[in-house]
Image 1 (spheres, one colour):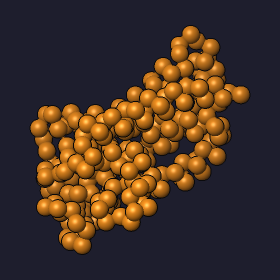
Image 2 (cartoon, helix red, strand yellow; image 1 turned 30 degrees about the vertical axis):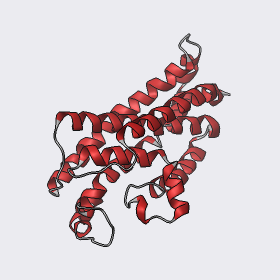
Image 3 (cartoon, one colour; image 1 turned 180 degrees about the horizontal axis):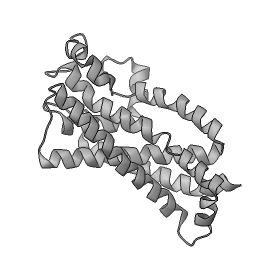
Length: 222
């Protein structure tokens, strides 16, 4: 919502080099990625609630692979992330941000929103399997969200970052989600890494996290 409140101010910022785009246009994909991140990173608390209600114990005694249980939750979180995309699109239209409405671009945005949300929610599930209590999980989630956001290219380009921050941004999966959204979502957006590399990094990260979390999943009930 603060995108709508401060949009006109952001649109006048000239000090940050964003090419032929206004800063507001540059920032909109980052705000979408931020919204997806902030919801997905707390998704892991659902597994703690399921344990307390006795649901998780019943799921774990079924013959379903642990990876299937984790992947199902990841895809569920990915679909939920699409609602954030719809809201950000409406706000961006209100602020007259030049969006791309080609079918391929919209499908691409939906795909990267789903993939990013699935990745961060799986990471969240892994954290929940380690900490195992709601209080600890909420504390860890709060600690993780802002560093992930501010060590990405969501609100400023990599070119103006100091070398140490640029190095962190290049290993932050959120940077690759933002990079893909920037070229697919807004007119004139440019990809620094390439959409193919963005997709590969996010998909590989999701696969690795699903495998790790599947191994950790039974720890929640111990």
